Length: 357
Image 1 (cartoon, one colour):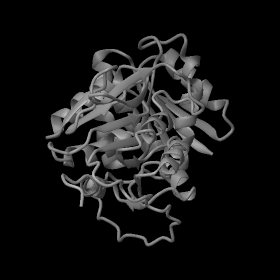
Image 2 (spheres, helix red, strand yellow):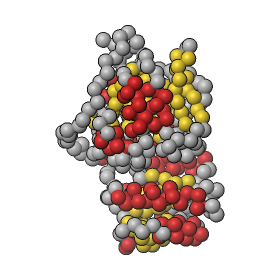
Image 3 (tube, rainbow, N blue to C red):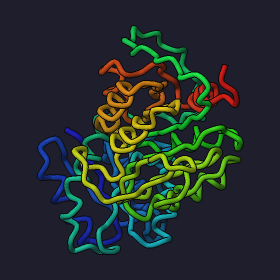
Image 4 (cartoon, rainbow, N blue to C red):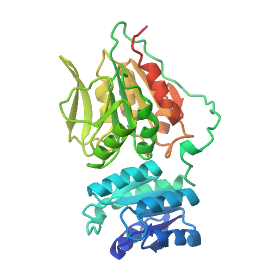
């Protein structure tokens, strides 16, 4: 059983969240708390496996409470966020601090329609519980010795001579904002390729993520806009609620955003992005799959590899918050390199050279 503590200043929200979770056979709600201070006392007393934590609370807010939970107890925390601008910024900050994941209240701090996100809530709590004790943040851990695995690698197709044109695409989900913070700021500002990123995230939150990464990075980072050119030395974050693809026109590459549904149910979808990039036959492609639940990215990567001219990189299990998306691609035999999150930027940079030999 996954033992859960529910923390929210609204009695209605505590009951709704508790009721939804209790319906899942794998989950037992062992207690609730009204604020951060009460939550810390309950954690000590009840020893939960997972915590759901409201972002905006009196006495001790969600951000301060999260810091203490990670510092003292090292437990996985699901943030419960509002869709206000303050709520979005706080949520991105919490993910950087080390929250396992988050869900958004559909209609404000007291959401009568919380049932709309019931499935997401249960899915994230179960994933957090199955992940076991939360790993310490990568920056604070001693790097493990690389584990040598027998990986079935796809054949690297030879780059077409003289193209010199390249593009990087990245897909990630749970744990992605923190992983991207380990990768994007390490990319050089004169990278000779555009970088297009799919991070599973609701509408509105990706703008805050892009702003935060841009502040931390030398390379330009922005939320992608429909119809704009995909330029070298710029990172484009797919907006939440939209699918992103890249097409070729007479002047180079262009970003296209749309509302098409995908088999993976994600919007944005890594599969959708990867399939579009695979059609850029005269471009050399670097595809990266990082931490996240599920298998989004694997089907699209398979199609991309069939088209050729691809280098595929997966984040290692050691540094993943959830080894789901990378694991699916590795098991399918689609990956050329498995890299710790701290080493992914260097791997990308080594693939994207200013001059092709």
